[in-house]
Length: 341
Image 1 (cartoon, rainbow, N blue to C red):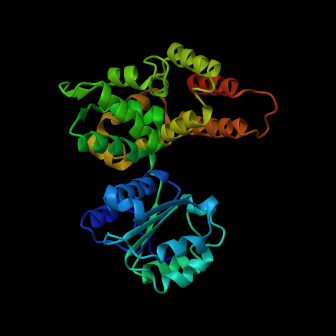
Image 2 (image 1 turned 180 degrees about the vertical axis):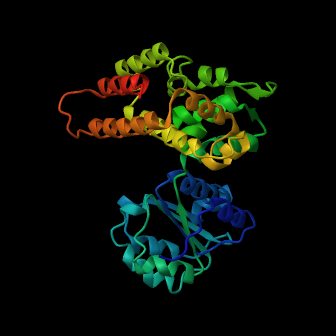
């Protein structure tokens, strides 16, 4: 596959400088950055007056690539360029014919494909995008350890402060769904007056709708501290409210926590800065591992990781015909808390 740009800011900065390209093929498994670039082009390249005659927005399921190319070959009317945007471009069935257009693309048109999955790099049109002077952009999901940085950067860009515990609460409970993170962050920005210097975890609980007592952050904290009563209480709450608390994100969080704990044991330098760098976590979260290391030894941690894997398989139906996800979670909590080896 041709080398794709993976930093959306490179594309946005070029667009802000009006350094327009004839083709923008935006692909990948993370829709957020594709939407950011597509929205910027849709809203900013042409003025409102110019859009009437020079901007077309179509959907891949409702059109063909040939029709899209015909739109792209049109000349601008009363504007310096045309914009043709194809949303859900992964639904186009005849994209292979794009190759012919890429040999001589219309220079006065910005042809934008929002392709919401990774394209097949073996396809001829993918390799020819760069040759045509176009942009091939791949939007990749962020890693779990990058979520707190994403949240921090979002609030910084809005000139607001958010404390570390609030960031971790959002990261643990919302996860890597960037659209949802931005939407919930927007709620906070609207709801909390700008005169408030720092957004706290209590504010996140109140305005984002995360229970102060029964959330995955508190659940993980209870297990790290080996707080039997609290961990079991939250697990039973999750079991009684499975739609609001699906098991798979919980298992993912627990697996990463105990896998990181295994790495923590082998670090020669356990200072906050060193652990933060080695595990790719915020300095605030380092405390969890120093506490967990006192409550679980290496053998117990290996056993817990194995139990989490078994629970994950059972939750997906492997060797499990009757146990609910809530039952599986409560059983897992028992194994985590009561393994004394």
